[in-house]
Image (cartoon, rainbow, N blue to C red):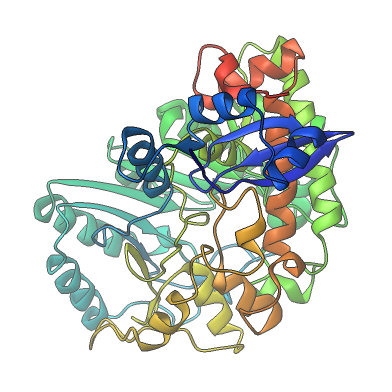
Length: 468
């Protein structure tokens, strides 16, 4: 019998998590590790490993084919380009303290698409091979160029079999024409709602009257169609609010998901906020937050999730859960989605746009008025996979994790730093440690939360296999 390689990590006194390359996992003991490492497995060990997909008799048999299929499902295969972020303007009517890009004042000139760029974008969209498209309008404040949004949406609706649109707006000033634009079912709103209203006012609106205007518009948007509105907070690592206060803020508006995000290191906000060497503090906060959510959900009429923890949990439980572009393996950039900036420049990701605008490294991929140039991005993509990384190959969480070469370029100016020294690795080790801790918990509240966040009715014992 052939045993597939197992990687392991200590989870407690004498307890370890074992994982294989296809994402199969179980909990066992130091005694099993000793038997496995010295090739002294007993009959019970062999029976367990074969029954749970960690062993096969010979290459090509059913067990081996099943393992190979599960392994392949863990890899992300880039599809046709079907997701585009468009930035028709950098002008904005707010001056948020942790703005990620170099926004300009609302009345500034020279920071919008001109007619030539708009026509080039529409021609380029018309040349895509995908029959579906998701177009996300960013800025600046994209509603300042409602005319551009209307023309792009009208074209996409007639060009693609299925089109979806997201408007990333601060919802500060919304005209009657803008409300009319946002009303259709194929158009979604993404806005910023900071952890608490006090923090939102301090970092974004700057005054009670403007804050009240935002709250009014957010409530109107939610009243029109709550399922088509999402809100994202930004957290200052040096002013982290109590998790309960954040949960209450989001629950009061009826949201069911909270995405914890510290101030982005790639953007200009890193000049004003601490964004380096924050992993330990941030990981502790995420853990406290998830545990607070579990307590909240135990008695809440409307339960909530922390989006990224739930995403990582689902990646552990099944392959193919690749819908979030920040965590894929391989994480090929500039392929299935691109960004077109206010000047028509192509970027592989929004973070690459920020890094370039900071002057750190030029990650532009050509211009919509000419063509896409992938030369620099193809070099990066050669390293955008964790399968051969000398640190990742020993990590039990390799099958669930990924890479982020743009983040590493931004933070360290290189992409070959030993993985365990990176912020990306330290954050994801902590998240997956917590995932497995909760998967194996016998606490009723925890099990109910895990089932909810996994999309299950209950936690099946097969999701927490143990071998002694």
